[in-house]
Length: 240
Length: 222
Image 1 (cartoon, rainbow over the protein chains, first blue to last red):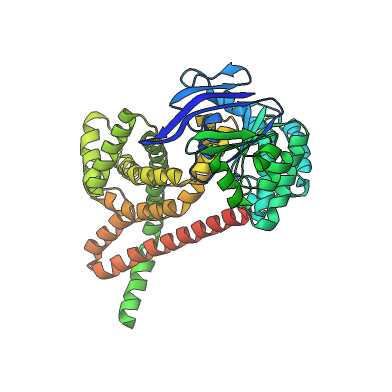
Image 2: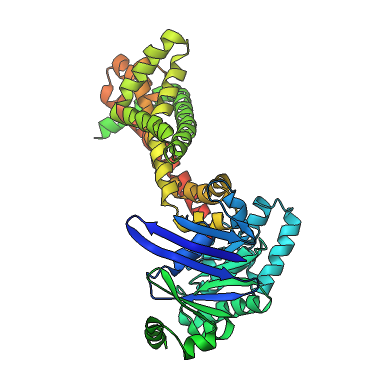
């Protein structure tokens, strides 16, 4: 579904990604882990072309993306992204947040969009909040709305950039629950997270990124019980 | 003290029919100045954030010149400069000068407000597949506009008071009336107190309306 090959990305003199290869299969749930500054969030942002890679290639759903020629807007519409800080639109109600892109981008008619929006809000357990503004919601609710908003574009793959890192501990569960449900429904997902319990339960594959390269890629059981790399062992000790 | 109060009141009663007429002119000048300034300001703000070096350059030259020269010079320049090429009334020369002057300041207000919107908003919008124009129109600009309202209100009040400067080209607004009244009646002190009161009341009404509008916006979104 996503194929990244030899991805290099630098910010000025700082090389953040040093030749990353990552193939994500359809319906696969890949969890990216690593210490902060390792490049995992940058990699995720490259898959959505919020950052442009300096070298290498990205193929989305069988189509190799040329960042110079291709219409990135169209490609982004097929790749959902959930941010650490939610980034809900504060001047729009919850429902308006969800239906904004289907109406603006897909030119969906308003009644149909509303119906879709309410279905998605129901799915994340927030249909009763449709008409309130985001400022009235808790962090966990905001993130669930953000997920619904992404789903409204019917993306082929969902990217999650530390979706629970900005949440109070008691609100983390409700967001992970929604993500787990999505995974079970067969959504292709790439998740950057520090929630190891989620990784263990939901991931098909856990990938450890360290200093801009992938050093470990394994199913959760192997990853936690028999890691190959010394840095991975240290990391697991740190988080457990 | 009571004597002064008496003569001010006397001047007020004698002059109010003229002043009411002149107040309309002042408000018209302000309205044109504000509307034109907002349009110009928006265009130049978008030029400044456009990413095009040429457009940015043009906007910078405009803003530098306007902010670097006094309004009264701009009014004279427009009045004598433009009238050479195109005949227009002194009202319009003054109103356009106010608008052009305002535009430079309002451009900076809009630019600051647009750039002050959380970059995450733009990213979220782009990640949903909205293009640059849709992102600006539907996500960034509405939020920027909301942030611009307090400084814009301030700028509108400045415009109202700055409109007094067009008396220099003979527009019959309230300051020019006060000036004439002062000379004719030999009561300059009282005349200027009266005109100061007109400005004060107008500004207070304006301030009240703005505050009402800001509160209404807040109530809506929280």
